Length: 246
Image (tube, rainbow, N blue to C red; front, top):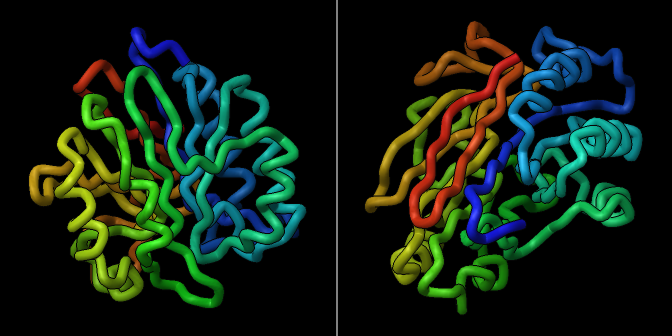
């Protein structure tokens, strides 16, 4: 990726595909909704597709193969991190064979993008221990930094999902404070729109391609447009971002 040119990143999250492509997910068909996003992604023409977890609902090889096939049609590099519904041991061989990147640091338009794995087996919440935070050490101080992780590092004001957010997030924020050019932390998991600054860092949610909730509700409340993704344009030390919908 040319460091002198702005980089277009598209974050796709919480696809929740199942082994059976006809399966119901919160009253929606996850495969059909992902397919609805295809034309909008093509028009966006991303330089990098960033998949940020819960790509599968059941951790099946069939679901990851369909995500792989969907991503490959855009003819751009793809990067990924797992979510709490994913099975790392199943998805990694499929994605590795396809040439998808797992980081932990990726160059994009002069930026360094750090991929952090917050998912643990049989645990809906997330956590980053010292080993998983290690990619934040030794970054180039002269280059802007964006961080991608599955679980939200700040509350989003929705009790149903905040109860299974990132535990011990102070460890992440302690590392981020040392990164002079940290600009944003982007995450999935919450199935809603969200943007808030915390300690001067933009905290940015990527809605789901499968089913979304209205923001700031005590329980999952359908009503938000689906499917959705988040786009970024990384330009020198600045970034622009917004939502992509079918």
